[in-house]
Length: 315
View 1: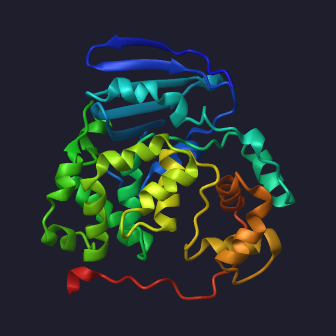
View 2: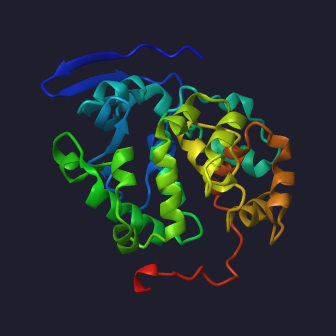
């Protein structure tokens, strides 16, 4: 697909770019997966604009996005990483994604895709940004993981550059800062030793992790899983965001197999094996199929109790 050029200019400390996607785009559905729960210090929605703070290879940066009539995206960025963020704007908004490769084999997915033509798969090009919160989400409730992310960014992250909402945002710490977080700070955030050790091992080889952003999916999965503590679940959750990997299906999830089984076959209690069987017709696009399942809203009635919160700060 030919991506139209953008118009850019500089005004004061901000860099501006306007870009009109050559396809329908739903801004929220496309970059929503980058938000790590309510109160994410690196992601805000304010007065119709989406604000995102990121640590780029060029340094910290803040990006503000707003969608105008006709689909045009108005973007502003601040900080050393501003140009890098604006250069990556089309990829962030799904320009490298190709929904045409997906053929719905189930009526539910066909209808869901028809209702949500603006959902694209985002690609940030930033591995650690997605890897670290994915590790925090291992085998805990979402609330626990989101709380840990908030506390760690607020205490160890860098103030986000830019005005307005950016003044209340934080940029992901750099690799060295993550490696230097003392054990009691991890404990204070509710992160056990296994997850904190995994993060420290990953940031010590941050350049090797970042190389996965330019790899094909099998090589990228192998690169991430070479780190002890990073398994298929964490690797897939990371590459869905950093690489826009349409086939990075999440296995090992507590709820996803049951949801896919119920949505596509009316079955309860599906496991990973059954989920992969049902997704086999979507080889190459299994992550997109799962996104559409979740968007459909067809989920099995809850029977089991919610996962208990295990607050390690009380230990």
